[in-house]
Each structure stands twice: as C-alpha cells, then as structure tokens.
Amino acid sequence: MSYIIKFLAPVLILFSVPIKISAADVSYNDRIFDPRIKTVQLYREGWNLSYPVLRLNSDEKLVLHFDLLGDNAESYYYTFIHCDKDWNESQIFTTDYLTGFLEDQIEDYRPSFNTKVHYYHYRVMIPNERIGIKLSGNYIIKVYPAGEPGKPAFTKRFMVTEESAAISAAIRRPQPGEFYNTGQQAEINVRLSKITVRDPYNDIFTFILRNGNFNDAKVNLKPDFVAGNEVRYNLLSRENIFYAGNEYRHFDIRSIRYTGENVRKIDYFEGRYHVFLVPSENREFKPYFFMQDFNGKYYVAVQEGRDMDTEADYVYVYFTLPSYSPIEGGDIYVTGAFNNWAFTSENRMTYDPGRGQYQCTMLLKQGWYNYEYIYLKHGATSAPPSFFEGNHYETENDYLIFVYYRNPRDRYDRLIGTLITNSSKKEILY
Image 1 (cartoon, one colour):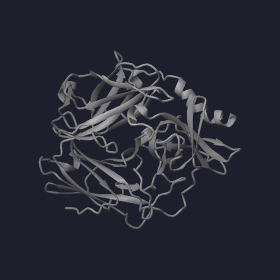
Image 2: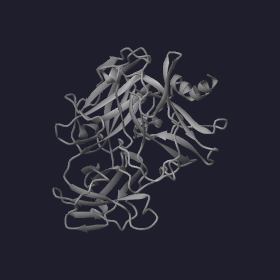
Image 3: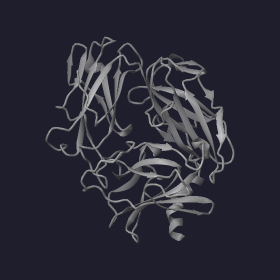
Image 4: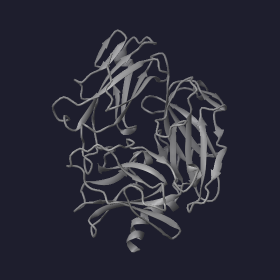
C-alpha cells in the first residue's frame, strides 16, 4: 500500500489544490487552469475522433464537452477570441468576427450517474443561435466562471476555414540523408482559385501539424515555387520534414469489471478504482510493426452503462516504463491528445530506483486511449518521439495543413484552405 500511496501523491496534490490565476497567465493555446476541470473535448458534431475545424458559413458544428469534478454544479460562461496565424489575439473588434451575443452561459449540464467520482458534465454547440462566427481564422474558446472572464477555467483552440484555396498533398519518404529512415515529408500544392494574391511569397503562410500536435508543428512556411495561381512546397526543402514517430501505445478502460487490452489488473480501494497497465517496453531500437491506432487521440466510452457522458467513471491509471537507470538532463512524460500533448507535473513520470522504472499515475475518464512517452530536455518546449518510442518512415500519421492569407489591407489573418490527409494515402498532386 505504501508503494501505491507514493505513486498517487502527485495526483492527490494536483486534485486538491486549486491553481491561482492572473490575467497575465492566460495564453492562447489548449490549457486547463482549474484542476477540477477534466476531459475537455472539442470535435465535429457526430464524430468524436475528428479535428476541431469548421467551414465558414456552413451547417457544420463543433461540440465542446468537459467535466467539473465535485458534488456541485457551477455556472460557466464562454466567449470566442479571434487569433492571428501565430495564435496571438487579432487586432480587430469582437463585433468584427462574432454575431449575436459576445458571451453566453453554458446551460446544458448534468450530474454523473452511479459513479464513484462525482462530476458534472457540460456541453455546448459551436456556433449556435446565440453566437455566430463571421470570419475565417484561428479561434480560442475561453470558458470561465460567471463574472470572472479574466480567470478562465480553460482555453481550447479551433479553426474556421473559408476554403477559397484548393490544397492537395502527398506525404513522402524523405530523400536519402538524415531523415531517410526516420522521417516523413509533406509535398504540397495550393491553388488560389477563388482569390487574387499579389505577393504569395510574403502574403501566404502554410502550417503543418502531425496528428494535431502543435508541439512539433511546421509554421510560417514560405512557398518554394509560385506559378500563376499555384503555390508549391517541394521535397528540396527541409522545413517540411517531420520525425515520423511510431504507432501509438494504447489501453482500454471502458470496463471496470474486466481487464481490457493492455490492462494488467483493476483494484478497488479507498472508494476509487485503480487500473494498472501492462508494463511498457522500450521500442526505440525495435523494428517497425504496424498497429491500428487513433493517431494519439482518445474517446470516452463505458461498457457498464448507456450514457458515456455521465456514466463513465474516473479511475486512477498507473503507467510504468522500465529503465535500468534514470536518464539525466531531462524528464519523461506520458503524452497524447488526452492531455493536449502538454508537459506538466500531472503527466511527468518519476523514477523509482528500487523497481528500476519510471512511473506516473493519472486520473482519467473511462474510454480508449492512445499515448506515447516523450523525453524532454530541461529547458526545451518540444522533442521528437525518439527515446523509448523510435521513429519509422512507415508510421501511419495524420497531417493537417493550414494555409493563411495576410492581406496587407486587412487587420487579421484569413484561413483560406485546410487539408487533412494521411501518410498512408497516395494522393495525386496537380
């Protein structure tokens, strides 16, 4: 039991101590400020594994879900913030990009049912009859307690595209060299079919994300070649090369009665369920092996219930990663879409010399999860999935391509085209 208490200590501290927030702490990325807020999800209506991208002036909707841990509901409001291509607040008025109200209360919330960890589940559609969106670009949804817009509970990114540019792309194996066996490269063609751009080299900016992870995004790429209304990013550049990573690790905690895939055992004590995963292995030097995954994403689900939003319980999940000795100069993190690919004390692993392993405990809602281990050097903000995972050019990945247009006469960046493609898809370029 003492071993489990030591394992749980960081989680219990995080769960019980609120974070003090000032307006200066607010940053425009995916971030949870209140530790009572869990399982923030934003996806296309009807497809909970989709990316948060909307077409402007369409019938498409995003749906935001999140949980507030505890026995009492609280009043939350939300608003939208328009951002430039680099996720800084745009220099335009709120009324320039929103219709209807400028903020609104989240009225759709319900208590959990028959769960050991009590919570309230909140839900809101975007856009809706109260708040509409007029401009394309990057957006932040900010959720905050009633009367305290400067102290957000969390912020979440999404994108609105006007689709005035046609994009095609192919994900290639890089040319022989440093990344030949470990990387993937995006070859992209953009056809400016519906707008006139006088200076594409200076006014068009392309961003590429692997599996929706902003940590290793390729940003502000300038065209390699422009001919008429066609803009190209070719294979001669190194700016569009990614470390390919590996297929994601996964586990299934949809059931608390039976051990799911990669679950070693489930215990119940002190009024909570504790899920111990099968110990991980070091895959850095192992050959590539294809395994179907969700490219880092997760979904909430429960087998012993009907309503995944309110009947899925929260359980303590124990991660272990064997290592003969601690790795100096940095830390190991458990990351994935479930924690916004962040590097925080909540998902940082600690080394147990007696057991020769890294370990971490996280409070997660029942469902199916993808994750990976990342070694982050002290002082760094991102790192390739090399230690413990390895990189293979064969790895199946999603690639999100965003093309922005900065008109010198406008005060905001337009998102003129979006493409979501996959490394296993053989696309034909123009």
